[in-house]
Image 1 (cartoon, one colour):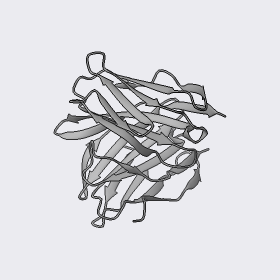
Image 2: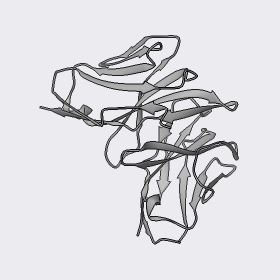
Image 3: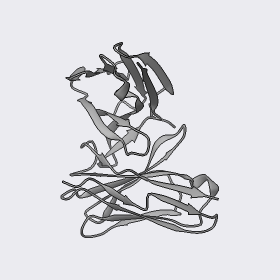
Image 4: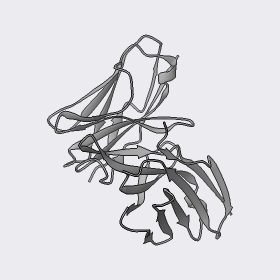
Length: 113
Length: 114
């Protein structure tokens, strides 16, 4: 069974631009969660989608948004990029979400200059 | 407010010895706890978990202990191997606003030297 895939793996953007990251979950998984990882902050939860609906949301500004398609693939969008948005963005899928075991993708390394 | 804390950013142990990674949490609503391991350039991978109704769970070289009264859990790796060198994240799950939510700690970098 194929794992979670994320594209692109690396991305360099400038301040003020917007970016869209993509995540394809494991086949059959309906929950997709997004996390931001920065040094010293661990994994900060962004949001979770389940069956095309946002089910949970972390404490991030409205510049961060996402969506999920009928095939469970998910996209995350960040508008008006700031230098502090530079981070590793991880996507995780699971059957039901929550405390079910989550399977992570390799992440997208975003650098904002 | 960091609800799940890993106060040791790094830990070094020798091969064959025990590695003990610690994690503290503040919210008594957490009822399920997990440990993930992360290698560079890879996403975290699930290692072991424990429900709040238990105080110990063992899987091969890995054992997780939960002390609910102290709101503390620990991961023991015995014996430690160089391949265990990675960043370890603890995570806690609870029902917030009707849905289970997973909160991660900041991670502990483990280095196991030969």
